[in-house]
Image (cartoon, rainbow, N blue to C red):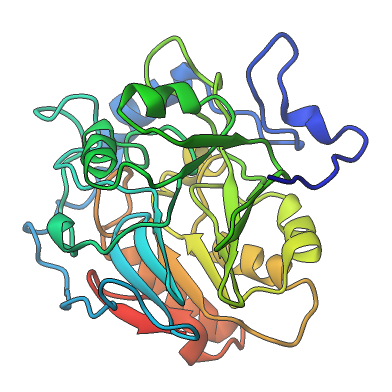
Length: 336
């Protein structure tokens, strides 16, 4: 196991007295009073559009390699939300896996899936590594963790600081924590924990006690950035400089309205394009940009299908090639 040396003041995301914080200006989270204003006041005057019928968005049959791909084969399959199956040659990578019906500690209350998982759980190939970005229920689902830990007991789970105990309590045998800029070196892959602007909580009294992050994973000669769940922040440029260039960029584009409340924790399509350009770090190459974190759970007020249409429009206006806009439908497999 290795790590990138930490520069002076690199640990400013560590909160004095314990826990974590976003280290950049204007990154303070909205207070509970603002949450009440959104849910009790704004939704009365600007009610969100109704949800579409269950499983009404387009979907395709996945076409990933089983049990493993050959060297030189690279693909991404979208299961839904931030859950993807990456095949980087023979290395199978799963991100933020959620197969449960609700993104909630209770399976009878909380955000319910509007699109069922596009990959059958029993059809998953052997997993070589799972990447976790943070502990929110739409990214870290206890029921799914238990299922994976039972079926693939030797699979390592990479997570930000503070999550190892949670994963072990769900049955994970090998949970590896990392701070921002630290790496995990394994025989088949190298993964680096990178900054993100977000927060953490699984209850009422544990806000920001565990870290949140993005990941860069390298395997079979390919390098992929997985953005996890994040707002736009200045460190995207540093990520591109230190860890790029990338063969694939994976960015969240949904859960952004009302903007005055969500801008500190979620990107909208315009922010995602800004983040993409920062990650390129001035290089002429334009890797595919896979858009995620939309179309599965209704978490905020924008219509379920607005993010991809808005992203595509802004992508073209920015002069970026249509073929590098990887806005997939649920279940779609796309090869690099």
